[in-house]
Image (tube, rainbow, N blue to C red; front, side, top):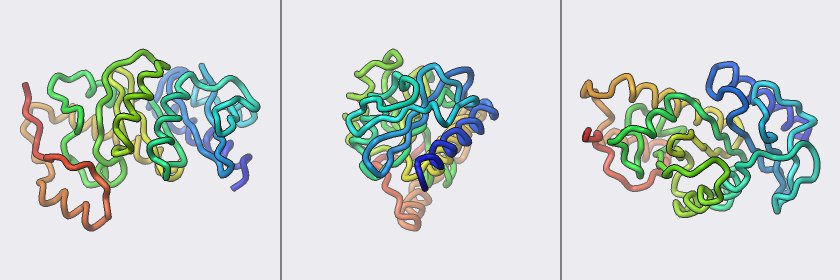
Length: 224
């Protein structure tokens, strides 16, 4: 696909995410890594529902702005994801309500925020790590992501929102949608002693779909 096509795709997916209430106002950002190593990125203070393809930020491989509006202040975050997950071609960061809410709960395990609830969350979003709170745009967020060494394709920023990487823009969007729905399920079922996937069922998914999940005990969380 030509760059013009990718610009249209970013705007199309951004509008879809915004219209379904997954990232309100001017929150959230999307980046796409191009074949030349440069990026297309949504601009700072831009609503994902009203993006202009011609005004997307075009960066070179070093992150220097070549054309378009000034890029999102979350560039260090996106850069760290690409550095540690070389196969990723797109990153989506949202402020989706249920995913943000889960980050504020006291029982959350930072190495596995959500228990194994549905096969599709594991298949699309993988296991999810929690990164402690930093102010938006803080370079320390990038350092925290680098500290995960590429083991996670999906992370939650505490009190902030999800960051999901994918091998394509469509894959990243699908994964962040699945993550938000699973966070909603977790909140709905919290305290009701639901049946989660067993370790054996998780292992079957791993072997059947060649999932690359960090080693972790997938047993249900214990409330504190």
